Length: 268
Image (cartoon, rainbow, N blue to C red; front, side):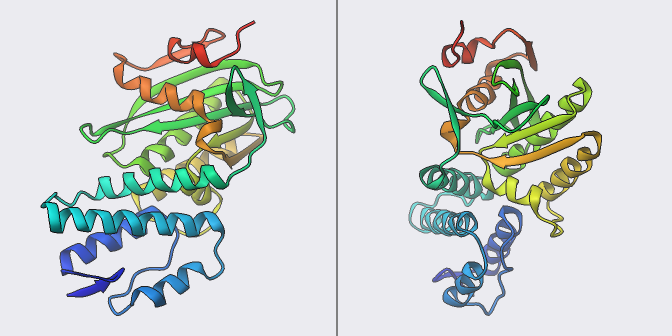
């Protein structure tokens, strides 16, 4: 038996928890002889607030899932543990984040005022517990803040929300390359993926492979940058990603607006 986060776990659960940490974010590996206090000290040391909040979110999700398994005989599902942690981390990050925003018809959407002759792309992803595939979206604005285009499609994400968020970035970059948009500012409301895109540390998980593909795509652009924003500033992409599940196939819109986000846009 192992003591992890103050609870006793058998070897199989310990291995699953270790894999969750490896795929969730760049944090110290869990050793079998670690106690919670010693490991938590290593987590906090030298890390930013977002990474610490991500750690706390996953700790809480693991604890809740452990209780469901022990007291309610609910099966342990790693994808559900990660999904719950991602939602909690995003909620906390939203409370602490203070991005620059443009108010559009009552909803906040981040616009970078510093880009010239380029595009601003908001991306998001949606996963559902009963589906193997995930859904991703991209909403594009010009440097003046005017709406240009939107796109959504399904991807194979294995019910992993972080993998889906990374796929959303990759799909958006591939689309931007094909469209000839050479200067891109890309916004995601997934802090973990943004951190991985900016990190130089190796990551051999499925998410890490997609992140490497994203970094490789940067060579096709004159300038590309990745930024985290709060969920409240990413409403258009969020709604469009979730709407993909009810479509018969991928959708692309130029100049016109997808029906599902028309009510969120200020149309002159």
